[in-house]
Image (cartoon, rainbow, N blue to C red; front, side, top):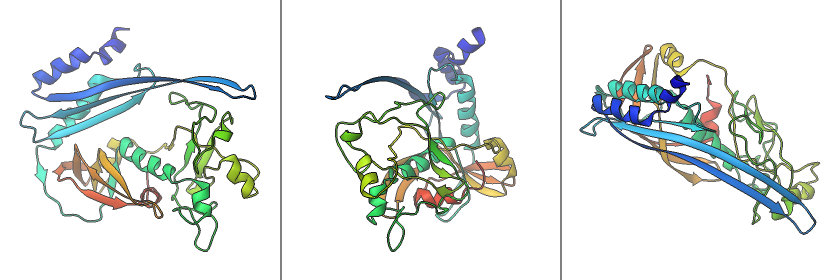
Length: 303
């Protein structure tokens, strides 16, 4: 349909940006990976994984103001370039007013990409062996793991190789072994795994070897996707309901400071905005932040 084509009209986006005196930068990428797994015991498995993304940064002619939007996609049919550009324009408009704010502790509204950065970072630390050996933020003081404890507030986090539009390889494969996986687990069937349910840590990544060593009934393999489900208000509704907070649209340069506590450090970029009494008042300066993603997600009040 014409309407759908217009939503993916890159030339139209460029022309509208030029008429609006907005400089745009970005790219679209699509990756297809086919995994073939064969073992000397006769195992033969094959799976093709596809994922794409679109990212656009917009700047004013003097480069003083900047905004970013991004979207993952399975086939680009759900990409709406005019809507993405409208978001960029809105944020550049918000940034016409500049407000300098000091470092401190602020309530924040996080765009999905920022929340994803936190969730994925928390997932990277979910290795059972590290937790059992006391080298993990999921270790229990005095020994053992924090499985069964409420670490994430009310948040739920799961992986599912058959999740619509972000499906991934439904069996384990690898060419090297680590605490998070083993070549001897190659071919292990993957299914939906709830890592966190209503804030409670349910499972940690556990290869067959470590599961047997710990006397566990089943291994828990790494799955190459992650979902943080939510059915709360939209971002516009969150803004309207907020008394005072910072709207953060993009993180970057995230690094691990202390793996034992999951302490991370990172920066904001391409748009941090002050929200007061339901309105966006203007753009504020960028910040460096230092926090565990587990602690951040534990303080979530709306998703």
